Length: 476
Ligand code: FAD
Image (cartoon, rainbow, N blue to C red; front, side):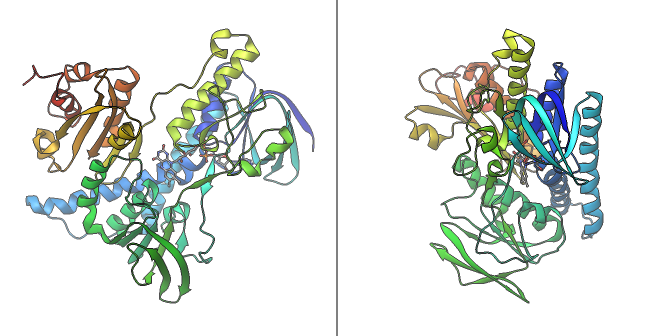
């Protein structure tokens, strides 16, 4: 193939990390090429992750809400779900966003090359073009944003009834019984979709001692109580050890503390984590070090061991979240632009987020940022809590959704906020305020004295800060 060259920046992978890096680089005046193996831009997040899952979770929550209205004297007929139409709706949402990205790439004059890319040297990448043949791209700087993919359990048979999140999002089945392997965010979100839209009964199996690891246990307790009706079994400290495809379904066997007899399911979702794509990009040819597990180590400027090659997003490690990838992308693009254009300020750009929020977009949502109580304890940081139960929130009561609560953690020493979590409807839309408070070093007074609009759910953050004992005792 021909050598196409002299790009300032080559970006490998067009997920949230890759397209954000390419767009920022182009905006800063660099000649940029973006390599993506899939026909659309947007990576996992837009095509088979964040966005399609939220499109379906929206429908799920409207359906739940509507059925709940019968208790308030408003009844609808039992919903009928046309799964083909629902799938088409999801595809339309994806198409709008990926189409938008393609237009933005064009507007910014980012060259998009479609095909599987592999480094050929520290300054060349060879692309197996989608239409056949190869093209070699020459670059001054590269940003690796090749992302991750779902872990597949080796002992599960090859069967269309056993899927990862990608398969589950295709909505090919209306399962009566579904097993979710892995009690993390992705598994519980997909379980929620099937349970709410097509009435699937759920089992979840988790190796560790609780669902949604990483979230504050008090929040998870509320979620679990509210969601108990979806589940036949929540199997904790239990492993899936085998599965057999039978005409009746997938017969799964378990081992561990909660292990039941083998169970048969119509659909089995494996949601046990994601592996980075580091081992399939020819990194060695560029001299870029890849860890045993396929991650690429980087410094605060997202630089790999090869000084002119950067890496961002899922491929550089946890948390594997789109908003983390985007911020890393901007730093890498800025550092490169600073170096190539001789702008010292840009060249000093660095990733120094204090905290990265996490959200489970389930019903209710669970959102958290910074330290949890357990983490503070483990790190020997003395904290005091500010709690606000939503049973005292006018808006939550008016919404008939007062199961939630807002929990803030403050350093006993500095009174600054070090963590916070919310369980309740719209928790994810509110967690940004707590992240901002942590970034700004706000204390209980700053948050408690900030006037929040009434009646809103966001108000519960102000109230929790006011409730924070020892600082705001003057408040009613
Ligand atoms: P990716 O999005 O994985 O993109 C990498 C791209 O690189 C892919 O398009 C891939 O095709 C391409 N690529 C890889 N290797 C090559 C190669 N050799 N040549 C050419 N192209 C290549 N995160 C959130 O923040 N919020 C959510 O609500 C959320 N929901 C999720 C739901 C699901 C079901 C899943 C699976 C994930 C979810 N995530 C969510 C995680 C989020 O999708 C990822 O963190 C994010 O996509 C990572 O972005 P990235 O740019 O690092 O990589």
